[in-house]
Image 1 (tube, rainbow, N blue to C red):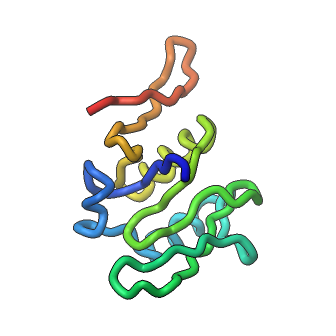
Image 2: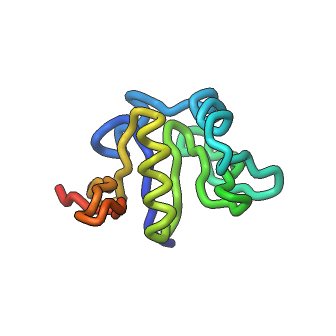
Length: 124
């Protein structure tokens, strides 16, 4: 299975469809961010809850590596490392969104006293 972290425009990821992140939103983000691109060969196949049909979701590559994917109304990452979460926070800022884990915790970047940004977790 695994643990997903989500970029959503709602405080809880299960409500993502109430204010969706669209493919055109992600296309615009990729156009502005040179580190991001659509992968042409990496994808995630998931069963649609309503139709039961298998749907292919292409991955978003970060510096050439597939890391994220647009799933329905959100951007997801499975079992992300801290650097991936930090990138998700910068992506969420550009999308006017939040980074939320499966357990409803929120991820943000905060500057340390030395000026470096660090991922912090805000528990519900």
